[in-house]
Image 1 (cartoon, rainbow, N blue to C red):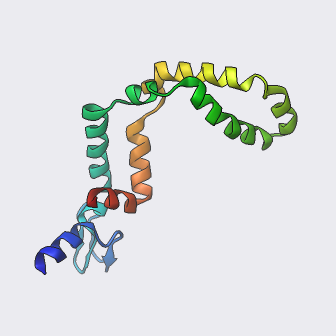
Image 2: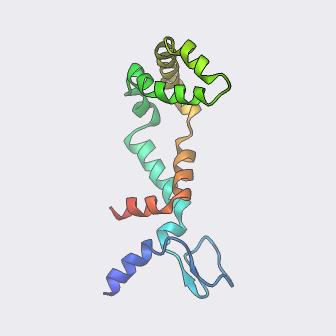
Image 3: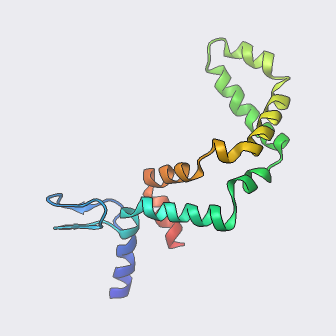
Length: 143
């Protein structure tokens, strides 16, 4: 039973539970309270995870380079058109640009593939996502 409780304490509770009299947010314990070790150390754990994935397994350039520009462009067309519709005279812009969007977006995606590491800071994106939703990080480590 103590092993089971110890493992659960690594992951739960997600948020600190207890009094806030004295609590250093970088440690999982306070005078009278506890937060799971993984949720408490979200930034450190997520940073290590991103490092392992992007340095040892697959770089952003490799992953993004495997996508076909025309396929990705076709997935982006509805999103771009929806965003355009939210702008003043959006429907007019959609009608004007619709015939050209596949070619434009294919070109943009191709350019992005060449410079993706300068444009996308994967570490910052993943860290922000994990800090915002600690449950995802806990689930990832549990599986």
